[in-house]
Amino acid sequence: MTTLLRWLRRNIVLLLGVLVIVYMYIPNVIVAVMSFNDSSKSRNLYAFQKFTLDNWLNPCAPQGMCESVVVSMQIALAATIIATVIGTFAAFGLVRHRFKGRSGMNLILFLPMATPEIVMGSSLLALFIAVGMGGQLGFVTILLAHIMFCLSFVVITVKSRLSGMDSNLEQAAQDLYANERQAFWRVTFPLVFPGILGAALLSFSLSFDDFIITNLNSGQTVTFPMFVWGASQRALPMQVNVIGTLMFIIALAIVIIGELGARRRRKAMASR
Amino acid sequence: MNTLSRKRTGYLLVIPAAAWLIFFFVVPFYSLLASSLFDPEGSVLTGYDMTWHFANYWDVLAEYWPILLRSLLYAGIATVLCLVLGYVLAYAIAFKAGRWKNVMLVLVIAPFFTSFLLRTLSWKLILGDDGWIVDLLRAIYLLPPDGRLLATPVAVVAGLTYNFLPFMILPLYASLEKIDQRYHEASNDLYANPAKTFFKVTWPLSLPGVVAGTLLTFIPASGDYINSDLLGSPNERMVGNVIQNLFTTTGDYAHAAALSVILMAIIVAMVLFYIRKAGTEDLL
Image 1 (cartoon, helix red, strand yellow):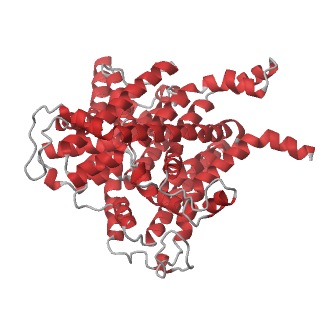
Image 2 (cartoon, chains in turn red, cyan):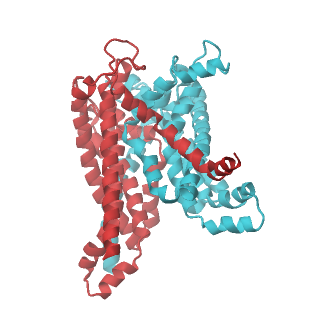
Image 3 (tube, each protein chain N blue to C red):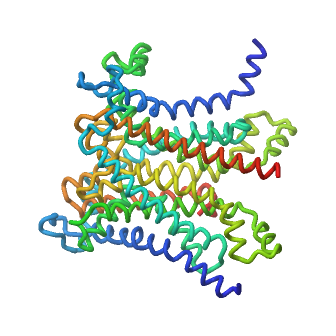
């Protein structure tokens, strides 16, 4: 009994921490469970009725849902590529170069993260209307907005990776007669790459999941979150839970494979 | 490479991102300011006239001040709850997780990958009238027999807390992780009990993370309307709901823009005051 108490006392914080994680996963578990729910017989959409595999076998049955997923994928992919490229450039510029206006740049990068989405979304809408694009809201305006709010997160993620890196390594490469380009591609870039990859993954999920800014600037274009929103006001098809669960599994797989790969490389390096 | 060309490369690298943010963040905010002074008689069909109509601000303040206050209150409560939950978890990851540290960090981020709308909708099921939480609360008389959680402030605040918790955990973890464990040992050696060590050593050293985390939680929470719409009733409307409705349903751009500007102004004022109080101005 006393040993149990002592163990509890030593691990109480860890235990509470695990409880917080459990709390964070309750909704994910429910989404996964509901993806097996047969809701056809009942009007109460927020209760589990009967087990079925139909939702997984016919994920695209609800009209317009898979189209909305494709739209979201296209926007998220384009936003991720553009934001990651110009954000990575900016991070290198800010960490590796001294120039006037750096603090201004840091401020302008910080601001989008300190602005509620509803304010950013309504500002963009005001601009698009002012320049006469009010009638052409859609794919392009959504994309422009998504790149904007992904940028800050990319720069901050890559920047922290870069500034945590030992610049002596590049110095060493150059001492070993690597020219600047070789030092960059053989030493700097591989070391920063995990940061860039993380930034890209973050951008993709931010863009794919965005609702508030998108809703104000989308015109007739329907992204997946907008489909869910629209459907939740009427009758939510259970297939949306299939998409939610799939996204979760795929993202988790990417993270795990990346981590395993990094671990194997570290081991290979150590044994050489 | 000489310094001049290094400087030029610096500019070249930063310019695309800077330009993007100026065109799609700074300029839009200027448009928002301009729209907030439009003639409120305008509509999508007839167009909007710039009449320097400052009265828009009084109109929205007079009509919506209770909703503004309510938004700040809900966001404030949710932020405090996030701070408590987030601190426990961040502390556990930073000091107690050992070799599970990376795994736990991934676990904090992973729920994000399921659309947050779906996760918020699932709280509708958890807090629903025939869910076990309501049953339990009724059984121990914390709720009256016909009491409910959905469509109450409790549900909205619970949703906000849940949705913005990761924004609290990550900055807290980043600043806790930097603390040298030897400070704890030194404090122990000087006969401080664990509580004293926490309040005299850990907490002050983690303040930058606390400030960053509370801001990153409070700001998005105060503008959110998803939680109040899905989990609340019209009695829990937040300022985000109003702005969204004025823009998309009513087409009352002038008042919507004015309300947006007011929300932003309140946030900027609170952030500046807060950062000065906490003495972490170098955070920016």
